[in-house]
Image 1: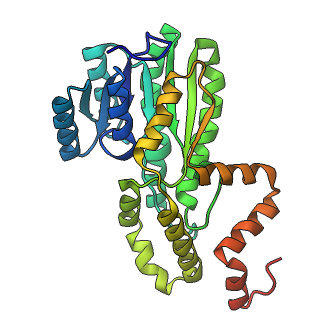
Image 2: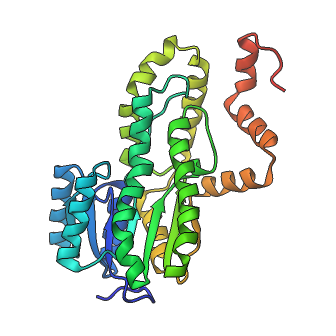
Image 3: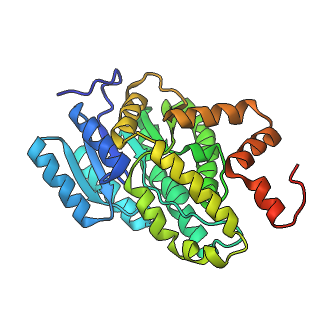
Length: 302
């Protein structure tokens, strides 16, 4: 089966974090459309499971060991793809982690881990594939951002900061690559049920345990209450995001940004049309931060 993209020369796809969640859903869908997919990941068991699935379904998916935080790993993975299939045509930077902690309490080591995966990892792999894309005057870089790249929430500062950085870098990169015919696209999902949420809870466990004695106890409690409502209300699954990623791969030309989930679209819309002060008031109301301020004896929050 040949790819459905009108840019028929774009065939080989590298997906970082491609063996689970959004990455795996995208790998399966793109492979079903005839793309030759290379799914990178660190977990050997997940790579083996996807390899087995691909064999059973006769899908053109091949897994690779890939740690986006390692220069050697990124170089080795891309070199292996080039050996097997030639230069990478489409790069989907999907690997990501999330820490939940207030900014005063996040350790710098954890903050560096957050950026090493979500930002520097993207840059690392992108830099490795770009020379070939530039020389051939074609290719697509699809960066998985988040509604958090536009809308900030308390306790999500580390994750939000990494996605804000990703958004800004992608905007610059898009203009830099325009003369070479290489497209740069951002995907901005809202809450989708994936393992990143479980992994985030594990990464943030020390902060969650310390919340009871933290000066920010009330902030943590209100955030967790709001997050639980968002989680329970969401009906979106990885396959929903995969269909949007497919559009980003096949639209000619692609849009600059694709927003996934109704709630994310609403949040980004209101962030755009409201003043910062008005938007903050909206979030304060949702999180009941004014009553928290009053209970702490800090006076009126207006």
